[in-house]
Length: 76
Image (tube, rainbow, N blue to C red; front, side):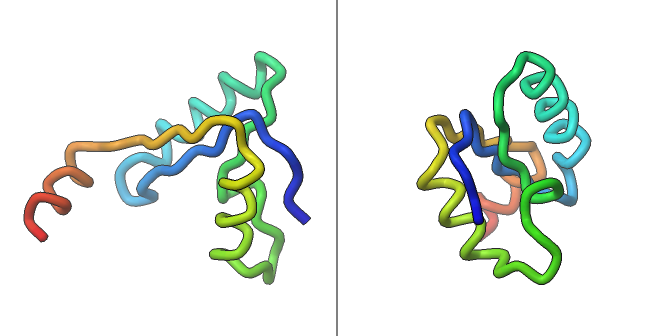
């Protein structure tokens, strides 16, 4: 079951995972509870349900936008 978080981190795995990992480490070292998929979705868990619940239970939403993500969005 998902619990309260200070922040939810949304990122693209293909191009932003290293940045998301670093951000998670930095914020966590300051004592914040930060939700990221690579730590907080249990094995065999419903991926989308866990994400939806975690967004609702987070005070902040951090969206990492990379150049690759922007180029895909404008091409669509």
